[in-house]
Image 1 (cartoon, each protein chain N blue to C red):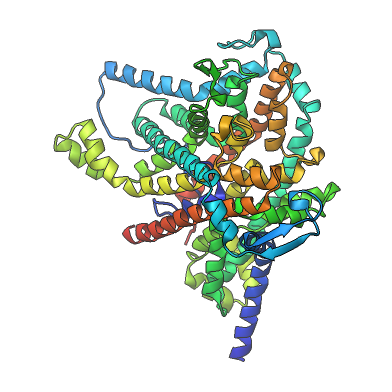
Image 2 (image 1 turned 45 degrees about the horizontal axis):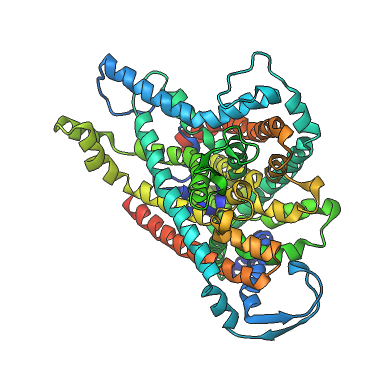
Length: 298
Length: 309
């Protein structure tokens, strides 16, 4: 009797999980495995282009293509550009979000309006933000046509990446502000008041009390921000189509699309994708660890 | 950072609260206690000035876009003022010639289907993980979590091949089906399902409730705020998708969603710039309104607590 109950419970559980697992199986795990398998083979002949290719032969070549591609300058460049992009967007975005949150965290009449404005960019997407800035500052149609040394900023070899990063920062500012605000609001008021009574000035209170207490929120925002920065695609595709002048904005995610879909080099794209996966994987592990720690502290 | 459900494993958050994401909270929420300080009127003016300058800087791109969308091509200038007589022609052009009506409809279909699908599959999976005992439970849960670590870029090469047979109206399936399950959503809901009191469950089973009845009549209504939050995340994630719709609809313009459609609009000819501005506003507006409307509900959910004992 009891056994039958257990069996029924288990079958119900599997039935409830089935839809999710079918989707994950077909659209996450199977393609993931295929992506890992692909670079182990070299394919010759066949008709069609890229993902459309059919026929032809493929031979096992082991790690050869992995080594070639991971060791290539192209991969190193893409990884380096992705890192630069992340190092610009994440700290600046969080810093500005924190600044806005601190400024809006005071009792002033009408402060709600400012809060709403500061969080307003959450309503934009990467694509909307990019199109807004492209049509305002873009090289051809822009109202401003920002130039540096006579070169339109989005076509500039050095300044295109910071410009794209600026758009990404603006787009995520609303989210950063909201995350930092809720972090601030969760701080114990009495500690701050005690510091004020002890005669600590506003600056001192911020750096000696507020900032350390905010560290879990800040770390969380750093990791989530870094994961999302590593996956940046839409901003690159819209603001600097093709990956910028001299491929100077060709981040990893864009390189996967560019080499695999546009140029039809599936093997190269697969290796780049794994490179991106490893970065995101490490960051996610970091985040899960942190979450466990925070839960214990809370 | 962007509103990216897959990247937000931790909207369960540093604050440690389970439930609605923290990011919608401050919008229109009651003023919380800031540090009390008696500022002189001079300092107060300074503060307002600083806040206003920052607010202006943040809003300026949106303001310029709105103003330019209402201007005729000759009126578009670097420092636009609100036009005395708004020109709505750009909007009608964006709507029909720019295919915005089609793009918005496609986005709505795809987004609603994905949101509904994710909410249902996540409730089912979260219920299994929170309330049922079965072999391999821990392992399967870890498998669920690993989906969060696999970025779309790693799966697109094969997924494009998988959905290739789905063309014509089946393109909608290609846009929808890969997103019908969410490891993040299941994870988030499981956390709030676990907070449903044990006594409630025992009482329900004593009353002769089966699992399905307990799930639909008690667990789901009790955790509605968390489900709403998860649904909003799913909605935003689906609406904001860019890479996958680009891959699936690059050869099928009728099925483009608004995010990818906007790029097509922006890449158009020069005299269309006003139309691009109008299209951007049309793409932006529904979400702005939605967030305004739902922020209050979510805030209420936050303050009432995810589960009322």
